[in-house]
Length: 442
Image (cartoon, rainbow, N blue to C red):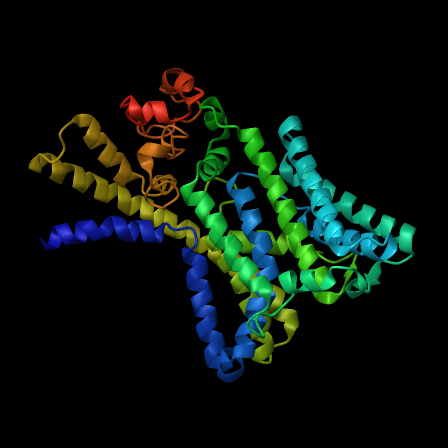
C-alpha cells in the first residue's frame, strides 16, 4: 500500500517540478524572506508592499503578452519603443491637435496594433528571424517618434495632459489608487495574467500557441493557422505596450520620447526567469508575472536595505542566469526519474493485468517516460480536456519516436497520420464530428 501511495505521489511530484514557473516562485519566496529579514518594518508595511507591486505592475502587463509571443516561438524587441511612441502620440493628439483624450487613446491603440501587425506580416512572409525584424522596428519607431515630436512641437518631452477633455475618467481607469497606496495598474496586471492563463489552458487558441511555438510545421500540416496565430501574438504585444504607455502618460501627466527604453529587455528577462523557453513551445503567463514580481522586489528591496541602486542590474542578471540553470537542471532530473518510473510502472501493471492492450500499455509508458512532454496536455493544465482538444491540435511532446504524440518532421508516421486526420480537421463543423463518430484522439 505504501508503494502504491508513493507511486501515486510520484507523477504529481514530477508534474510539480516540471512547472515552468517553479524557479520564479521559489526565487520570489527567497527574495521576500531575505528582504523581510533585512528590512522588516519598511518592507512589510503597506507602503513597502505597494512600492514593489506598483513597480512590478507595468512590467508585468508587458511581460505577460511577451510570454505568449515567446511561447509561440517569436521575439518582439520593439515593445519598448512602442511604449514611447504611444505616450507621445497621445500627447501630440491632445495638446497639439486639440483632440479629446478618449479618441486620442483609441487612435493610439490602433497605431500600435498596426505596428504589431506589420511586425507579424514581415516575419511570416519573409521568414526573417523575429529578433532581426523587431530590432529594426525598435530603431525605426524610436527614431520616428523623436523626429515627429520635434518637428511638430520642437520638444521631446510634453506635459499638460490633465487639460484634455476626458482626463478625469481616464485617470480613474488607468492611474487611480482604489486601495491606496496600491495603484489600479496592479489590478490590471493580475487580471491580464489570469486572462492569459485561462487562454493558454482552456482555449483552442492557447493550444495553437503551444503548437506554433513547439512544432510549427507539424501544426500547420494539421490545419492550425500558424501564421495568423503569430501575427495576432505580435499585435498582442504591441497592444500591451500601448497600454503601458497609456498608463504612464495618464499617471505622469505627460510623455517622453525615450520612455520605455530597455523595457523590451526587462520584459524578456522577466519571461525567461518565469520559465519560458527561448525556443518556444513551453512556458506560462504566471511565470512571467512572477518574473515581474521579482523585478519589483529587487528594485525596491535593495533600496529599503540601504544598498546602492546601481547593484540592481547586477542582482537581476544573476537571478536570470540562476533561474535558467535551475529550470534546465529540474527538467533533466524529471526526465531521468520519469524514464525509470515508467519502466517500473509498466512492468508492475503488466503483471497485475491492469493494461488491457499493448496500445494502452504503450500510452502509459510514454506518459511516464516523458513527463515534460505531458506538459502539453493534462500534466500542466494547458490542455486538460485531452479528448476534446486532440482534434484541434494533438497536444503532444515534440520528441519524435513517441507514437502517441504529435509527430515531428521526418517521423515515419507523420505522413500517414496527417493524411488520415487532416480532411476531418478541416471540415466545416470543426472538431465535433470526430468526437461524435467515436474517433480516438491522436
